Length: 351
Ligand code: F6R
Image (cartoon, rainbow, N blue to C red; front, top):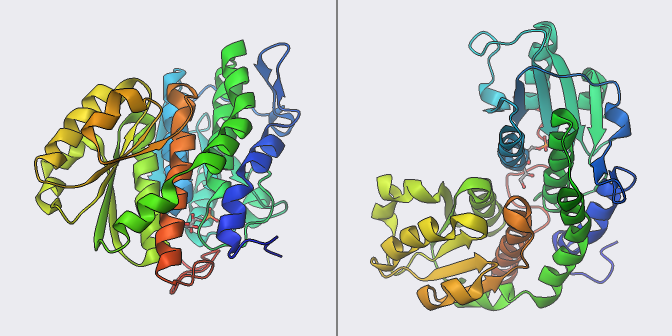
């Protein structure tokens, strides 16, 4: 059941600390500062990595690819429906990673089948034991989020991000005390976000807006995309996410006093993104900052949703949780069918 929550989505948002603890269990060693994933003990990879995924899982893949690149691994992301082994070079040293919560998404399955046919090594990063992706791929790593009933992916996105962080460590054979401690601290930090979130008040302040924009750079760019996708799915309102630097290359034309802009202001990119915030404020748009540095940013923005600092890689995971809550509360105020939004299915089995 929903354990007292009005919707599975809200329950699953609140399950994130537990989901992340399960994802990390027996995979991180705090004494050694090392990461080891049992399922991947046979995986060897010195070649490039290609991620294939759809929707929210694609946003997780964008985040994961950046983690890999930061560790010196060549990594690219493809929307599974656009993946074409005839166009992208795939060889026997290529690792193709399908990121798929359900393990049943038709677009992702056909990309993985094509990768297998062309001789790549394949890995499924999935939540569902024995799913089609788990069976199709040479290797499988489970995200261990537990069943997700709400159609909108929430806890599984956070679990994918954490699993990808561990994958980046496994593939690069690099870890550190700091990295492992930051992972270990995430569940408690997520709990802090859940306990102290002002997202409901922000949702009430902007529930009548017709459009919402989300901006972030670096590790926050996929979070901006994910924030907008969640808002669209469950409120049926127009929402767009952008890499913060792209705003001035076109979308700024849409920004008015009626379009709230959610800006991810965490880590080391704050000053550049603050520049973009000033651009939207010059168009009188209200700005909500999701930030670990409220002292630096609060005078530039209308609302602050605070998150603890988890370092430049992981604070965006916390920022996303604030965005999940904002979308949830806007949809809730509108009386939407939050767990089963119109036109959407939990697993999309057609191409
Ligand atoms: C969004 C959402 C979808 C899925 C997408 C891929 O909330 O749930 O965008 O992320 O359909 O699904 P999986 O991860 O099962 O392959």
